[in-house]
Amino acid sequence: MAAAWFGGWLFELILVAAAVLSAREWVRLAEPGPQSWTLGLSIPAVLIVIGADLLSGMQAGLVAAALATPALWLAARLRGMKHPGLVALTVPYIGLACVALIWLRNDTGDDGRGLLFFLLFAIWATDVGAYAAGRSIGGPKLAPRFSPKKTWAGLIGGMVAAALFGYGVAFLDGAGRPWIAAIIASILAVIGQIGDLFESHMKRRSQVKDSGTLIPGHGGLLDRIDGLIAAAPVFALIHGLAGDGMGWW
Image (cartoon, rainbow, N blue to C red; front, side, top):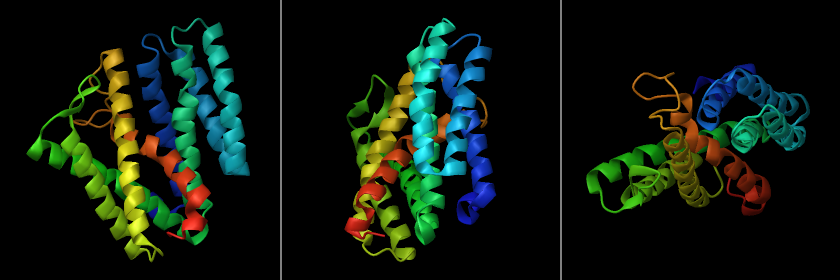
């Protein structure tokens, strides 16, 4: 929260640390077994993307991601890894989320802080609303193959909670059209749940309960930010393409 509020080097430092930890956990899910080479290839690739973004801007970060992804796939294939595609996915999965978060906080002018907090609260509210509605209402399962505990009631509850908190953050920050913020937040809730289901699928595929052991009682970092990783690029794309036209913030 402090890093998001103040921005600058504190935000960038925490983002880099989170990217390294997330990439490490992703590699564990993507390529089980000895990971020295996998980590030695994947983490530098993600750091190159972040470094290009911080030094030269979002476009440089996107170009770096476009080049690093096939390069990582080729390196993983040459090393004889069983799942080079999943290893290469480390770059767009982690790297693009970091590019989006950096752009939202650093490159959107005076709106950067508000936009970042809007995204964070939308995803956090989704998790809380989905848990509360899923536990209290229950009902049909959302995707039992990937996550047996998630329900359609939970998804709807998460969308409602995200819309309410999204509206609140937008209103407090002086956004031009908070009602559009509520709609965008509900869309981000769906994207966040998809990100959650994707990570759950990867854990089931790797036959592990959590992505890591960083946070006692919760699991790894990916277990906490899987929704944010999925939603950040989508939100950056929405705001970048239609933010000015809608005049919503």
